Length: 327
Image (cartoon, rainbow, N blue to C red):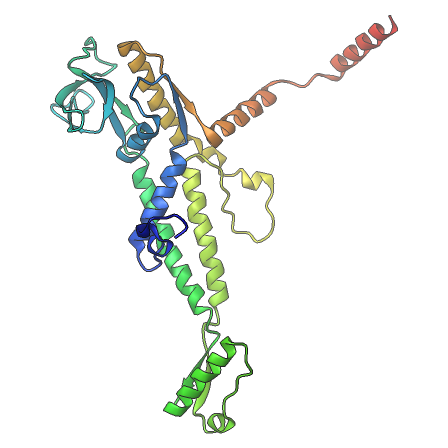
């Protein structure tokens, strides 16, 4: 259909009766967004920036080392005797494609040991505790998925403003014909005797459906805004019906930076270690909307710290301009 393979038909991708399907959908969409958080430069040949970020955000860390094919990064197990900060000292790597199976010593910047390319590796962490973004993404994916299912059920129920109840088979068939005529745009009717005999009754249904749908939509927006705030984007989730002021919109600004600042610092440390031990020139910085927000904040700080000229200074400037014009 429209060039899509059969297994990717739209009715098979979105199933509002399976939480797991919606969870996977939201998780993949979120990872597609967060993959753009950072941009790398000076990576070794064979380092894929796209999958470097995917590994970091999903697994929480990567292992970089030298192989016969060059400098590569892997995901593997960490273990062995713990160091003075109770961190693993060895990384176990097994990559069938490259035929690279090895246990390497994890080089630490706070140790005095000289880096050995043949026996040492360098760990790049997504964050200080190597937690990654995937657990956070799955948390909000589950909340969004369950709320969407509830919203879908409420939407379906809202179609039934009332229930027509029948006591007899004839009344039941008459109701079916009545609804069928309505769907086709015809003048529909039910025999009056059925109503007088109470063979057909109309019962109210879901009086609070509209309010429930509104609340579910607001909850969906709250979940999305909370996720964006976690990854450093100021998405306001104020539930007030009227417009909000700028200071209200910026209330949660201070909570946006710590996580992404920690992620940037971990990547910058990795670049420093790779550059010093492998002779590279790697750099990393914010990308996309995160970079734009950084520039806006720097500009705002510069504007706040740059004092405006006093009235006397302004008058002196105007006098000097006048003197130049008269000459």
